[in-house]
Length: 278
Image (tube, rainbow, N blue to C red; front, side, top):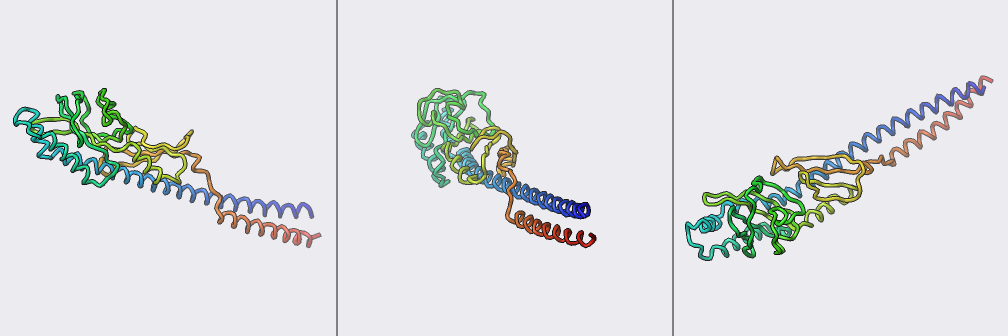
């Protein structure tokens, strides 16, 4: 009797274990797919938000590069035309382009000419001579100052304060240089906090520079996407693997509970059937 009964029990328990294992595997697979979609969605939100800032910077820089006022100022710098109040006109031009973007995080824009000892922003002109070997490719600098970028030692707030900086080449028939568009350094951190509030411990990178970090990450999973505005610009997010622990959902608990009840019922049925032979 005992041998027959326990053979029934082993079969019932084995089937219960197999069923539970299949349920757990399915739940884990679905959970991983959902989390993959969740972080991919967060990556898209983050890249769209960053692209919105880059778009503002690109528009301001492009408008300045095509500005007749700035072109005339470049001619005055070369001595082709007299400088009759052009500096203040350039300041007004920069200010107008900044205000037109309706972005409160857009701090200022600064124009540097190669070989010039002056840099012009929306609020004034400053002594600043940029190195001739400064890279002219479009680039984002995270939490950097103009002093850092150009190896300057200017005590003005505009040069010493940390910003998110978009740098782009300026080129006209009369002068070449660099246009830097400045955003408050904390603007992206606040935005990332809002977007990634429920994403656990993460780090966000623009290129190789860390834009945002929350919590400690011992081992992580990378997500990556390209900027829709700058194909060479890559956004990356490192998510802590501890964010990916499997969460037992109610469907799994209910299914296992029902299977457990049926398992117990089958064991009693096995006890009854085994007793019929003895």
